[in-house]
Image (cartoon, rainbow, N blue to C red; front, side, top):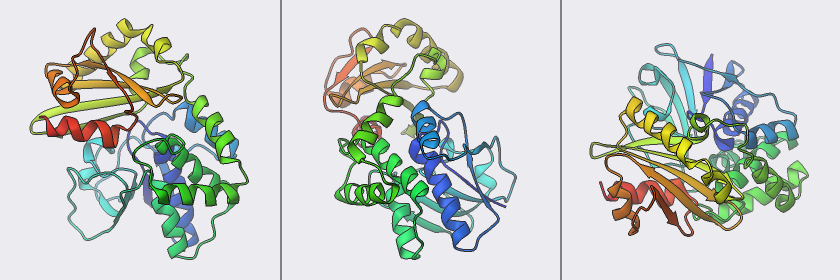
Length: 305
């Protein structure tokens, strides 16, 4: 079997990209492939799968040595499954920078500087002349909406917008009304413990010996999230100790006004002050216009390590 999966702490792009790649591979004649997830899905993704009537992928805990895998929406081994270093990576479809990545064998690697992995997968469908069915189109456009925050993120490209609108037509949805409904579904954080909250969408990267962890949650009210700041900080500090993290940032992103408030902790938290040119007060820093971890947070933090 060939295992298809995205990164840990899965988001809508990583889950739906796994599913759409399984669909594409099977239509190309590769029947022994299956999409998996590497953790609990969030409420936004749950909304998407339910809306289009798609079954949630099974959870994969570890991979056997030399197992055939296809990676989507990531390439960094620290964001992948246990045992990935010894797996046989056949393909990578991704829209992130290449980091901590080596293979023993040649592979198919397709990366583009676009807002969403599904934008790239759309191109694979077209290149291989494979028709995209409505349900798959619905998953794909949902991921583009999610990763670009309905085209408001600086990671969004014209290609993302054009492809999203084409997919919306195939899926039979109004992109604006559906998109806002979907994004708002992901802002319901009431059922999450502080520990779960900081792991909904959390990624780690190492830069010059500094371990950086940046988590992100979307909300329609930053103030409501900050009511639980003390408990959130306790959860972050526990995570820092257990995982040897030097700087942990929790981005609380306002999807309505396109700003973020970040809770910043760690023994090298001054890196954030240097990177953003702002003083951290009460363990927080307001980042006007910042909504993209990939383009607006990780790069500037890494430049200042």
